[in-house]
Image (cartoon, rainbow, N blue to C red; front, top):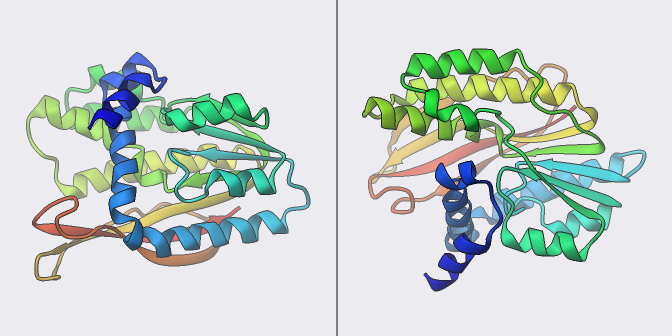
Length: 264
């Protein structure tokens, strides 16, 4: 608890990111990783194998950009540094360890960026209709543009809408239906993919395409789908990820994800 408190106080972040819980979520993710590392190993192994296969196939490996870098559980920093001359990490929160490493290594660059451009508009979200309108507005905008030999979107796409969804739930004082959440998550993911298409360089995407909830008896409760259109991308691999077994996220259900990797 003391270590977490120091981490919370010392990690550089923006006031908005701290206010809306990004920092808390970042620290919580790291602790979940340590609790569930054994369950996550097959997922992480797939991510790293696909990354290495893609990196080795490139005509040159001067630069790589990782979107939604977080703690780099999927692709550890040493793999990025071993395979590329310049490494750029992009996220709304960078862990304290990455700030310290960026001071040590000139080849490592951190960009603090809200990849949804929705963070500064959360206060104005009073209804689900407001969020749907925001999603449509953002779909027509260029939110980011990067140029690199490889641009990686790391298990990010279905997570982009979670904070706006949480903001709406607090305003309307009800839990949104899973189908409502899936629809919004898909819209934000489509916008992310559209911006990726506009970037210069090879793209590697890890994305959860389904989320599966099972009850205490292991029976299927709900399967959520994110029907994002990956036209123009080559599917490299798919696998299942036990994100949160029973009692990790809830005493009533487990959460498993179907992950797919694409290259474009």
